[in-house]
Image: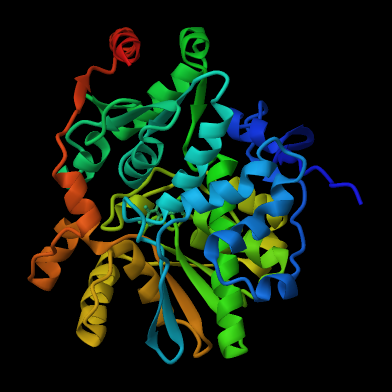
Length: 432
Ligand SMILES: *Cc1c(COP(=O)(O)O)cnc(C)c1O
């Protein structure tokens, strides 16, 4: 039997499609939609049941998505290099478990996607050096910087000067060589605007061979399927019952990967979206009107999204309101509930959770007695300012974070004027 090549089609038009490598390189299809796999391959659970090694398991789960692509031959190596940290499933009580996805180098689940994408770009960039642009207000910037450091790709990170916490800033600026961190004298929306304008500007395109590592890139989403696949199957083998998953969500990338895993046939009983006060999905489910809006600032700031970019992918999966409502559940949690959740969890289990994870724990209490896996998206020591005053204790940085805090910082301040930014970039990468 020949291998069927997997194409990646636009959510807006199935006649616009790319190979996987091209979809990763372009980031977005030309019609402004998002890339999705043309079909979700059905999994053979029996073949996976005996595979214990995570990166081996992941390569098998992703195999059909890579079929016929230039990256296919490298898939096992990509998985081995990207997934080299632990992923414990902790038992909280008889019917609640916590999947800790924050043991990678920058202490959030974004390490899975960023590290995998960096390995893909490292291969794709062999012939012609590429430059990745990222606008960030937090975890994405640090995950991408750490993942791409000393790879064969240049990275420019734009972040809003003075608008992120000192620990967050240090995680973005503690790199050098191929990573350039620019503190833009403006807010996050302007950083995003700079990146968007760069993509439409021939100067950038010809000089720098641009691509992006934001969560719309399919190369960040596919690897996230693998932890839902692995965890649900191992859980089912151990307990003979399917777990539900509660996913703290902002741009809905992580939860989209969970739906893909379920539709591939992995034993995820049901999936629940936990949001902070940015309640665009719960409001949609209640009103049938989808209304994106400006984001609200909350304690779970990595989820402060009013117009989630991956809604388009979820809506492609469940393309009528009726289907969407049958398949998607969402709960919104206020800052007061997040605080209560962090405190209660600590009192009950002597375990500190981050504000994002706390949204999912709060939702857990509103659900059935069936078994649930709460997805823990970040290490609490990344969000010490929110937690320390609540619990009346200091939170020490983990060893990975301490290592980053001890490196020299290389932030470069820049105005939001395109000409100033271009001059600076030209000088910087000439040296290296
Ligand atoms: C990015 C992030 C989220 C939200 O994930 P999405 O894929 O955007 O829904 C949740 N928690 C943490 C800690 C994050 O960094």
